[in-house]
Image 1: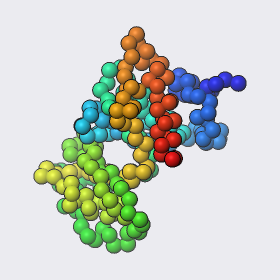
Image 2: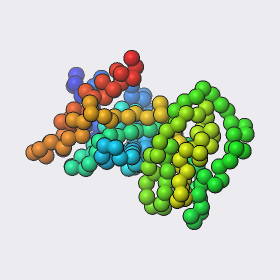
Image 3: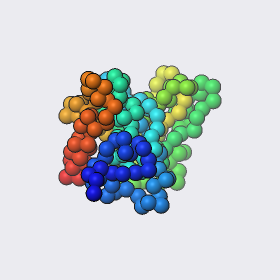
Image 4: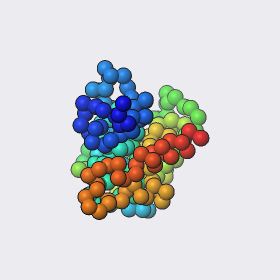
Length: 213
């Protein structure tokens, strides 16, 4: 038996994913229905994360590998990647013209909201049409509605914010920091063509072990 996953999808074969990663894959009849994941990239250390695009994958582990291959190769500046299931991102209405979405967020949004335990939420702003959402910070809240209301007090800006994305921090897979720095290196001799040369698999295993500890 091969030590790597074999698939009709050439993207999976090209990545040489260890066979053990297949143990959490969906059943065969569901493999054609890949999940959509949002990808956020930190271009340089101490810079905010910004939305770069989407990838389609069966699991969040694979989503990260696809995201890294697509958004951090061939000399592209990158010091961290966040991946989150699109279904776990709550989106505010989009304003018209230069209206500020925060001007439409009031205490009334809490009416009927289902509160739970306090959790951390990540907040992203769209400041200009045609641009990408940018991470502005995180906060503690008991629900998405409360997160939006608190964001108004903490992150409202002088310039209009056209749209807000909110997601629970725990829903993200975050690969960042100095201990993961070597997986972003674009190696010489065009080795960027082989995703396994980025040492991503070992880093993902380490990340998941720490998360499950």
